[in-house]
Length: 298
Image 1 (cartoon, rainbow, N blue to C red):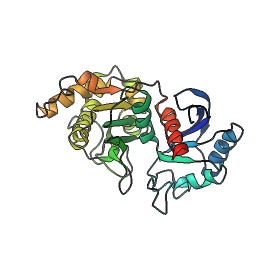
Image 2: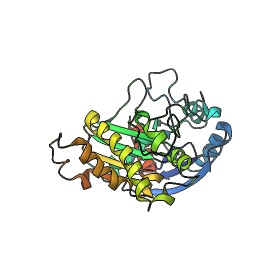
Image 3: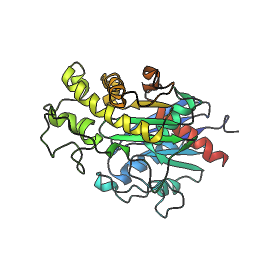
Image 4: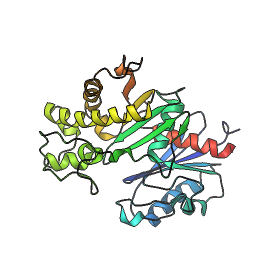
């Protein structure tokens, strides 16, 4: 039935909100974009956009940390985000007060992972890691066909790394307000700008030293993720990955760091194992449509 009904997808990011309508087969019909400002203003704009579209279910992927366990009394709320105005905001509850339709709720990175598994380069796989590197670092992890939810959701962007002694950023500083040596603090946009005079990663794409440094940090993290989650494919998106050769550099670093420890078909073909995203930036929207389809059929 969901193949014939119009579904909604909301990719609720810390910088922008992307609203879209489409169908369960992955057809995107229409989309709108709103800046993420105050919770009330932003959610009102999204709700008004969806109000006239006639959607039958909505899939929401939210920036985090956020409560994704339906059994939690805080399910659907934004938690300890650095965006102070959004802390403790009940995103899902506010949307439900506007629409009496089934809704699915997860993190923005988990729905991106779901989009790649349903429509993209990980189609047919049940064990997948999706990593996004932009203004922050987030991870969506699917194991055994299910997106991981535990006490919260993976916050793999904050794993600690060994600092490269060549790093020009002063010891004890990073782009993360919580940790000096986490993946997000060392490779995401704010950390890049802090080292190189406000430049973006894309502006440094031809700087061999910068790419080797950032790719080395990403390679460290990927080694840890591969050893812990044993994914059958690793997909990397976000502005830093999309506009630089960091993924190619990280592949070589992963092989170096693993040092032959893992012997699997995936390790024999890292070019096909560690890849850039495949859906032209639509993986989150498409994952939201799949989440909406599942909510409709539950």
